[in-house]
Image (cartoon, rainbow, N blue to C red):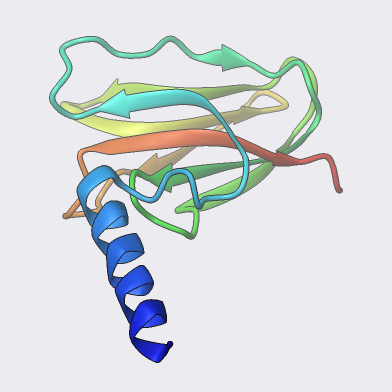
Length: 115
């Protein structure tokens, strides 16, 4: 019986490593940046107020989280040759370095409506 649990755990770990753990991260994916892509996703305008997080592709914890109001924006931009995460909140722009070493993508996700 214990061996079955061990094998299931190993299978889950291998699936996460092979395909990323994005499905385990909380939230709904809204904008994705792939390092290998030549296209930069456009900034997204917030329609639903709430908490949003920027995750490295396989990470379980966000690099940063923000409470956005309708009309705020989030996404990715090229700043001086470096791609960064961007949160535009009430006219103020915050940047998040995309410095994770073992990931090739970053994902903005809607997490919840709690304030």
